[in-house]
Every structure is written in C-alpha cells, then in structure tokens.
Amino acid sequence: MTDFSPLVFSGVQPTGNLHLGNYLGAITRFVEMQKSHACIYCVVDMHAITVWQDPKELARNTREVTAAFLAAGIDPAAHIVFNQSQVAAHAELAWVFNCVARMGWLNRMTQFKEKAGKHRENASVGLFAYPTLMAADILVYRATHVPVGEDQKQHLELSRDIAAKFNHDFAESIAAHGFGDAFFPLTEPLITGPATRIMSLRDGTKKMSKSDPSDFSRITLTDDADAIALKIRKARTDPEPLPSELDGLKERPEAENLVGIYAALAGVTREEVLRDHGGSQFSAFKPALADLAVTTMAPIAAEMRRLLEDPGHIDGVLTDGADRARGLAAATMDGVKDIVGFIHRSIAAG
Ligand code: AQP
Image (cartoon, rainbow, N blue to C red; front, side, top):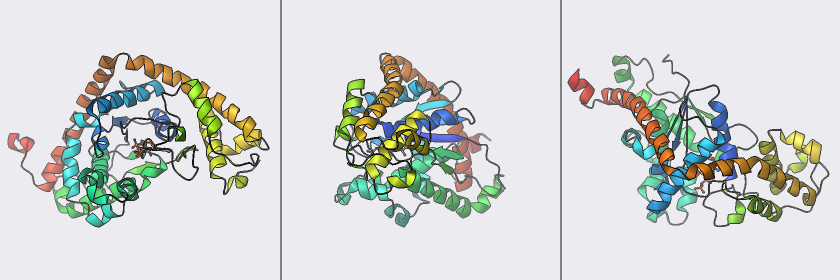
C-alpha cells in the first residue's frame, strides 16, 4: 500500500461577510489541527470568482480572510497560508480532474443546485466544475485530512471518488513510475465538534451563510459588540424555556442552534450548556450568549483590524506561503504528468 504522510489542507472563500459559522466550523478547527499536523490553509480566490466578484472587493476580502486566519492563531511560519490563484498547479490539476470526473457526479452536487437555483443555464461553467477544482486544491498536496463544515461533506466525497478513479484508470502507469498502488490518497473529511453546521439566526433550518441577503442572519467577524448583542437579541426563537436534556431540543432548530453556538464559543458540550441553562427563558439566555460571543470574538476582531492596517504584511505572508506551496505542488504535478503521459521539463532535462 502506498503510504501518505499526514497533511491537512483546507480553504475559505474570500466572498465577504466571513461569519461565525466559518469561524467555529472551520477556522478554529484549523488552529487546533496545526498542533498535531503539518497544515496548508488557502484563501480560495479562484473558487470565489465562480460567481462575479468586484475586483477591489475580492482583493480586500482575500486580505480579510488571511487576517482572520492569523488573528485566530494560525502560524504562517510553521505552516503554509496563501491564496489559491498564486499557485497555478491548482488550475492545472483541476483540468486533469475535469477529464476524470463524470458529468453525472457533478450533476448530483446539491451546492450547485442551491447556488444556481432556477437560473442553471446562466450559471458559470466554473460554478458547475467547482468540486473538481476543490479536489485539485486538496490533492495537489496529496493532503490526507480536510477539516470542513458539514456543508462540504458531499464535495469531499467527490474528491475521494476522483482520487479513486485516477488511481484506478492509471494504475499501470502509477506502478510503472514507482508510485505503488495509489498516487492520490483518499482524503478523510474531519467534520467534528459542536459547530459543524451553524444555522441562520433568522431561520434555524437554513445554514448561516455569507450570501444570505439578511445581515441579521449571521454574526460576522468584523461585527462590533453592539452589533453582536443586537443580532443575538433579535435572533428568532420559540416561546418555550430551554430544556435540561438534549432530547428537548428536537424540533426546536433555533434553540438548538443557539445552544450549539454557546457550546462552541465556550468550548463545552451542548449537554453542559443545558445543565447550566436548562429552564432559562431566552430573555436570560440570549444576554449570556451575547456576553460570551462578545468576549470571545472581540479580541479576534481587534487583531484583524490591526493586521488589516498593514496590507503589505498580509500580502507578504500570502506570497511567502505561495512560494512554499508552489514547490510542493510542482512535485505532485511532475508525478501526474509522468503518469498521464505528458512530456514535461523534468523528463526533457532527465
Ligand atoms: N454555517 C456554517 N456552519 C459551519 N461551518 C460552515 N462553513 C460555512 N458555513 C458554515 C464552513 O466554512 C468553511 C469555509 O466556507 P466557504 O468559504 O468555502 O463557503 P461555503 O461553505 O460555501 O459557505 P458560506 O461561507 O456560508 O458561503 P456561501 O454563502 O457562499 O454558501 C468551510 O469549511 C465550510 O464548511
């Protein structure tokens, strides 16, 4: 069996309105993973342009996501932080994967259906092919683990299908080039913790999302204390007090969501939250949640503001990370080219 060194990869789109779901579902997990693994964290600007982005906003949002990574505690010297478009190998491998993946596989992707909506014919080809680029992002580093929120589970499964089909279709060539029985790992999604799916504050059945038209649906990482408190106060709830047991949250999506947010922010389980707050009315629980959210998020927001005052520093981090990522990706692409049968520079030189 081919042995793959453990490596973590994940990405966040710079599409503005970075929210508590992104922070708790993804970024805090990224910070945790760097204690035990080599990690590559990417601001996926090429994914962002699958729907139109104002160029100035795209650059601003790319720096904002980077600032959020750094403010949350990601160490760009010990690990790699960069923006996707600086490493052309992502697009290069995505093309190979476009030729491996099947139309039927992509047709089943629920995120495309949700995002394209009724205007499927008008959606960009990039939005349809988004999951093959995501597979390339991960596999160009032959990453073994990907921490993501629940909404990305289907894309991760597709990435495994693409890796498996590549390994199968090119099995003979992979072995002949000395790569054993698999060139790409079947990457493990890491979807764990109390915050894998934070829901909208306005509707507990919809996920908290950057693209929700209502600003009151989400807490963003740049919201100040007043905005956070106001959004939590206005969050939709039901008239019942909080239950003391998890079972009592069934059929109560808004209550379940606020308890999940509290648990994730406090670093405790939902059971512990209910042990302390079971029986409380929302009029008492919401101010406690607002206080916790402000205390936890204010230092991150302040650090992001400080970092964003020096865009040159942020750009330096991204460029340095991209230089290191490019080296790793180039080694994978040499292997892919050998396996597929493309003539390339390393062969010509060899
Ligand atoms: N509501 C959420 N709860 C938990 N995790 C979430 N993530 C996104 N929303 C939630 C996770 O955040 C990471 C980065 O997400 P992305 O930038 O790739 O965007 P997305 O998954 O498409 O969701 P967004 O941020 O809300 O954007 P839109 O509005 O475009 O759908 C991923 O790990 C994701 O799982």
